[in-house]
Image 1: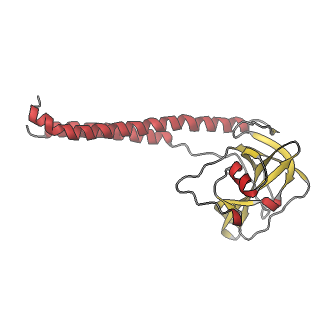
Image 2: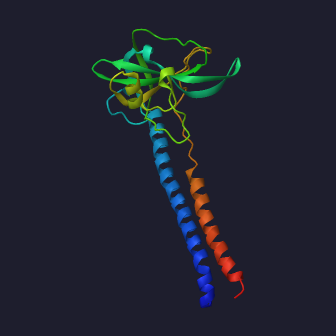
Length: 229
C-alpha cells in the first residue's frame, strides 16, 4: 500500500501520465475515424471503376466516372501543382493542365487534362469536345501548401470557386473532372491512366497511438512498483 506522502509525490506525474494517455487515445480514435472515411472513398472509387461513364450532373457522386461536353477556355488555363515524371528524356518536371470547360445551359467545370512537361506546348482541341474522367472533390490549402500565383497562372490548391473568382469566369461547379485515357508517347497533356488510389495507413497509425498509450501506462505502473517506499 502506498503511504500518503508518496501518493502526494505521485500526484503530478500521474496527472501528466493521464493527460498523455488521453491525448494518445484521442489520436488513435481519430485515426480510426480516418480509416473508415478512407475505406469509404476507396469503395466509391472501386464502384466507379465497374461502371461506364455517366453524363455529368450538378451533383455527381464523388470520384464517379462521368462524361462532359463543352468548349475549353484555353485563354483561362492554369498550371496545377508540380510533378516529376520519367520520360524518354529522363526525369522531367511538369504540371497538370487545368482548363475551364464551358457548357451550354450549365455551370462551367474545371477539367484537369493531364500532365504536361515544362516548356512544352500541349495540343489544344478547338470547338466542342467531350471528355471522360472522374469527379474530384475540391481541395483546401494546408499549412504547407505553397501560395497560388494567379498572375502567373500557377495554382497548388484545386479550389474551383476560388479559381473561378480569381480568373473572373463566373460560377463553376465546386468539383473538377480529371480526364482518364491513354495517348501516344510524347503526346501531351498525358491524362490519368486510371483512378487514384489514396494511401490508407490509418490502421497502423491507430495501432501505434493505442500501443503508445498502453506502454505509457505500463511504464508508469512499473515505475511506481519499483520505487522504494
